[in-house]
Amino acid sequence: MRRVITIIGLLLGFIFLTGILFMTFNSQFGAKPNAEDRLRYQQSQTFNGRIFENQIATNMGMEKGSTWSTLWQYLKGNPNRTPKKGDVQVIPVTPEALSNTAHDTRILWFGHSTFLLQHGGKNYLFDPVFADVPSPVSWLGTPRYSGELPIKPELLPDIDAVFISHDHYDHLDMDAIQLLNDKVAHFYVPLGVGNHLRKWGVEASRISEMDWWQEQPLHDLKLVLTPARHFSGRRLTGQNQTLWGAWLLKSDDFSLYFSGDSGYGPHFKEVFERYGAVDFALIECGQYNVNWADIHMLPEQSVQAARDLQARVMMPVHWGAFTLSLHDWFEPAVRATAAAEQAGQPIVIPQIGELMLVNNEPIPRNAWWENVLAELRSNF
Image (cartoon, rainbow, N blue to C red; front, side, top):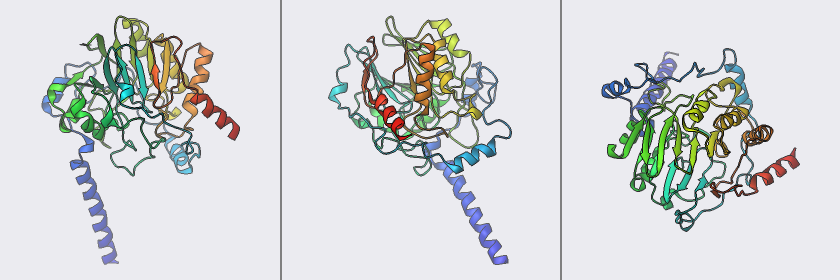
């Protein structure tokens, strides 16, 4: 018995030590802020001396008593959490198709929250995640629905700017950053996220860290990091050591808003009050649950956020690629479409890989989603 106890103790010690070493030396976890960083953050109203905070009180976890029921739902499973093979198909994109950027404003969606904006002859990439699983290890999580990307990242054109909304794995992909490093002119990130990029080999001179409501000129655009209601962190402990946010790009004739991850709050109306109506709004709509609605909007709230922004057109993102919650994989788009129709909010759902013109009215659209819905209805 003593020998068994000793062996069990050694095994547990080995597992614990392995975990500590993994957490310490795996580059996927990024870098922690140092004393100099914290001193720099003191100038931000979002930093309380220890961590970054939301504008309003925000429940980061689940309501009391709901943890076990949610865990049971995860264990029980949902056969519709992930699509069947062929439900999410990708339109292949060639480098030649991306080379003509002189006139049209176009968006290429990679699924989830990754998209390429081509505007004014420039290429802007948002939250590039090209991994098959958004996780520090490949076996932790469900793989990308489509199994492939519309174009290999190394075949993308030179990128004039990359924008990161926050440092969670489904928005900040170390491998993507390192793969793109040589073809990106500049990276724009919330406060603190620059530490991760520098650890991964990006020169400090090519990184701009920004605070909420901070503005910078970028080509013909005004670039603004606006508030979001969320949290940050790439480790099990030490959350909210970096800031999170949404991006607004505004020129004389076009404006685009990307919500990043966010619960619903007053910040959407505040963006409109400060900068006016938005032409095209990519709004988080997926991976939600009533137990964590403070940090991920329900689809009806996503539509309301678009209304608050007085968006000419909204596009639901944060769905269509990965399963990170309990709802049916197609539910975000179904509920958002219904809510948008009821609210009179124009909405588009492009196919992954579709080069969608966004400065046309009405916006041309591929019928893929209507076809998916028809197939789903025939199966229920």
